[in-house]
Amino acid sequence: MKSWLLQTAPNACNLTMMNTREKLLAEIDAFLADTGMSPTTFGAEATGDRALMITLRKGRDPKSATVDKIRAYIARHSKARRKPRPKAAHERAAA
Picture (cartoon, rainbow, N blue to C red):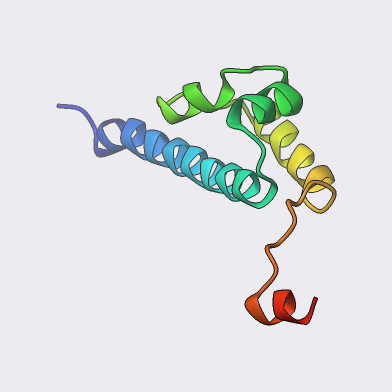
């Protein structure tokens, strides 16, 4: 009979990685929505991998170096690449 640790440890590791991947995807999706950048462009510019988003969404667990690259890219480009906010009705009327 396997010990409790051996039975649960692989599942716990997978859950932790899944959560890391899901959190990263949420960060990327927020960045993409904020900037209007396409997923392909993001992957190419952030990591050199145009298929990054496809493979992450299919379940690929990124290496810690890849996660670091992605987060550094987002930090550098978040404010510089924001798409313009549409004007509110009262702002359009005043113009």
